[in-house]
Length: 108
Length: 113
Image (tube, rainbow over all chains, first blue to last red; front, side, top):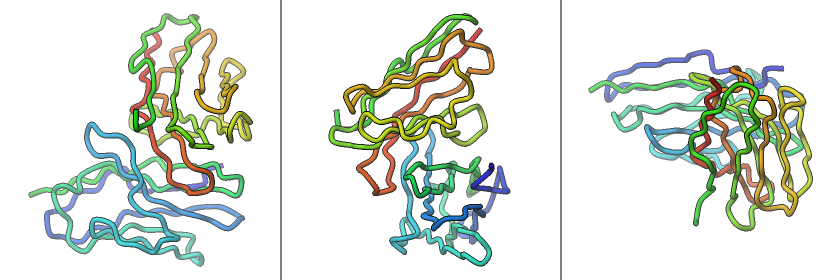
């Protein structure tokens, strides 16, 4: 069963514009959600996790249990934000499932 | 090394051959994951170990796929009688228990001709 949905495969914005990458999840237990990022020619790496309520590189994400969403937002996109972004869900048995990813392109 | 290491980085196999992909996790990391990533797709879960115990293998696509981690460190993913649809990047990741932060290797790209 699909547990993490990222409806946009591609997203393109201009530098300085706000960006929102959407993520919805389906899970009956208590969700822990993450955003991972893969920059060109680099490894997949953690960007942020909902439990920390942190802002990393200007990105934030809020868990909305009513809408089962965990959208990633940044008010002013930068060219170096261009990358693949994956939303991920960790389940009660500690295994982690990923969405299909969104490729963000920030144009100059 | 400091990170997760995978080998080989690239593997070309003829259909029907067996392949073995190796993962060296970060020392001390309890959890180890294998994912399959097809072109243009996200990482698809294959299997998960906690130390030497394989706690979840529900993602393995067929009985041709087998993974082991006998001493709780290095893991091997074996694919028997490879098929063209097995062509993908196989990602290994490790983590300290319960942190949720996975550290990924660079992946092993398998091409089955």
